[in-house]
Amino acid sequence: MESNFSKFISLYRRNEPTWKLFLNDCGKGEVPIEYNIAFEEGLRNFSSCIHSMGTRPLRSREFWGKSVDLWRKKEAYIALGRFLLDEPAGYRQWDCFKFEDYVSRSQLSRTFVTRHLPLSNGDDEKNFNGKFKFDWSKHSWKRKKKLKRDPDKKCKLSHDTTSPTVPMIFDVEQGCLVPLE
Image (cartoon, helix red, strand yellow):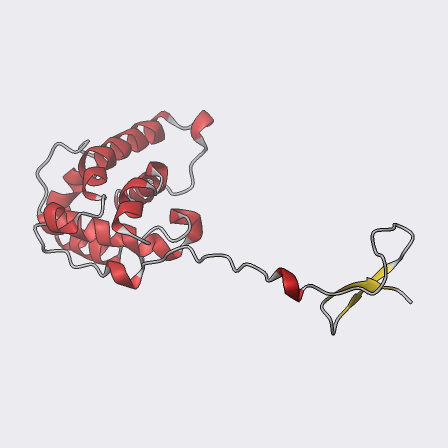
């Protein structure tokens, strides 16, 4: 996480007294644009981790904005917030939280949904006044069409193989099953 959000963490450390208030303010404060840009950039840095953001989350602006699960982005923000607020990383799961952990997660979650989720829709020019330059083409991906096999290129068998009495073996050279002789 620290490497993905290194720019945000660096800016946070330089502006800590002010920016600390923004982490869990439920999205009420007015943050500088570099705050939002640095966070979104850090979030996109997670794209290479399939366990954090899923498969190819930056394949297009639309996919990033509409198809990447909310919880994936939100959990990244919660982890970052807890790290910067010096809260323990190892805490119990949802059904037996300490109340302090529940409150912290709730505030961080609300902050993310209110402030950052609307900006995480791929419309960088509008959301960041053209100040965030992200090369979407570097991450683009389209599903490849499956190759159709030519039915005339199937292995031709000289024997009747429909009968269950004919034992078969794979022929490496022909690339198919042939009768065992």
